[in-house]
Structures are given as C-alpha cells and as structure tokens.
Amino acid sequence: PLHREFQLYLLIARNLLYPNSTAVRFPVPDEKVPWEIEFEIYNPPFYSAEREENGTPDFLRENPMGRTGLKGQGILRFFGPNHALHPVVTRWRRNVDGSIYRKSLKKMLEVLVVKFPFSDQWALPGGSLEPGEALPQKLKRILRREFWPQFQKLLNQGTEVYKGYLDDPRNTDNAWVETVAISVHFEDQNDVEMKRMNSFLQGCDLEVTVRWQVVDKKVPLYMNHKELLQKASLLLGAYY
Image (cartoon, rainbow, N blue to C red; front, side, top):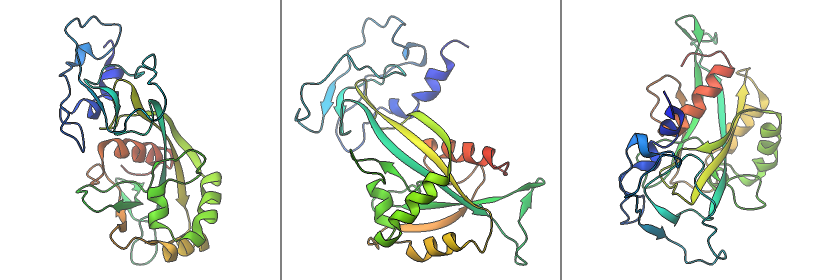
C-alpha cells in the first residue's frame, strides 16, 4: 500500500512521550505521516534541549520520512541529520565439540551486545558520531583504548549492510538519526583478532555490561537495532 514504507520508518519516532523530557508529541495517525498528505490541524510542539547555539535552525530541513509530532532539535545535537555508526559484530554459535550450531539447517550467530546504566534494553555497540570522530563514544566506552585502531581496521574490512535513515525515539520533524551499519564477522572461533578484542572489551566503564548474545527473532534488542542485525544475518545466510 501507498506510503507503507514511511509508516515503518516512523514507528518509534512517533512514541507520544519524547525521551528524557516532558515533551509530548502531537499524535500523527499512520496515513498522515507523509508530508504530501494534507493534515491541516497538525500543530506539533517545539522542543530543543540545547539552546540554538548551533546557529539558526534550518526549518527547511524536514524529516525525510515525514511527520513525527514534534518540531525542533529535540535532544539531538544538530538540526537535520545526526550521524551514527552501528557495528554488528558476530561470530558463529558453537556446540561443545566446536562445530557450528544449527537451527532449521541454518547456522546460528552470536552478536556482541551492550547494556548501559539506566537502560533496560540491550543495544548494538555503536551510536552517535561526534564530528571528526571515527568511532562512537559508546563504542569507546566498552573497548580499551589500545584496541581502537585495530577495531577501526576491522570496520574498514567489514561489510556495509545498511546506510541511511534510522527510526529513533529522538527523531523530530527537523532533526533525525542517519546511521551506517557495518557487519564485522569472525568466521573462525580461534580468530586472533576476536580473541584480542574479547580481552580488550569492557574498556574503562565497568558499569556497562557487554556479552555475546545468541541471535534469533526474540533477541532482546532495541527494535531499530534488531533490523540492522537482521540485515547482517541475511548477508551471512544465518538463522534469524
């Protein structure tokens, strides 16, 4: 049906309660998401956590996926696109004898996930990129500094599985998240790089929990991260 893809891209970004604030979104029904559909009574509140230190807001930048029920910058750093990076780090799930575990004849994956303080959800080890930074701050929190250059190399050798708009609870009509998801897969259980990475995990932040999580549809991840993981699973021909 018409505009189905827009509705899918703006499910999380229309949650009525905006995160980390008292802002409440203007309710937007599915069929009114696309800008080209008339919605005369649409009058969303304006919310920006930061004062306009980033210059005058460019209201010509409209969320490319449609209405979210909130104007302004929200809690994002910039008007317009806010760039992120989400590495999808995987290895094969193994049986006790070292052979690859299968389900419905397909090989099963394990994915590296993290949980930050005050969050009840697991997440992929990525996030917002600061201008000029190659690795997200959230990734640096779980990897010790010595391994950053090596991880950068792994990313460069990885496969891009998605690039573009990310449905995110922080998105507004004027600010949104765009991400690059890169699959980093360790084929061999004795992979030296994987063993090194494992030894450098946890980084400087002991409050963050890091673990390898078996991948299937019920994996306890943020909805938008699940979609990125599904794309990586598809690329590897793995069970999901």
